Image (cartoon, rainbow, N blue to C red; front, side, top):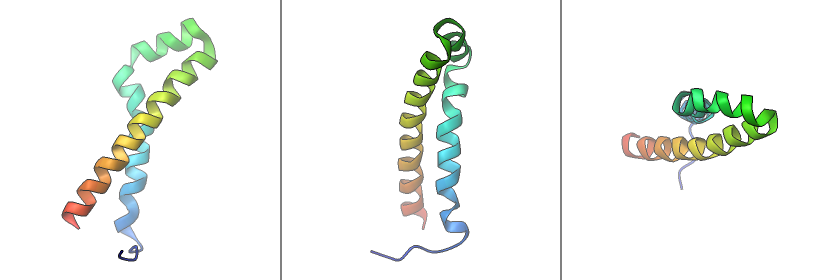
Length: 71
C-alpha cells in the first residue's frame, strides 16, 4: 500500500462528495421539490439523504477507479 500523497491529488475526494450531495437535486429536480411540498420537511429530507448517500458512494467509487487508472 502506497502512502497518500498530499496536496492536489486528494482533491478528487471533495469533488466526488460535492457531486454526490448535489446529484439528487439535479437528477430528481421537480420531483424532489414536490416531495418537500407534499410530504413535509422530514419526508423530503429523507428522500434527499437516501439519494445523496447512494450518489456520493457511487461518485467516490468512480473517482477512486479513475484515480487508480490514471495515477
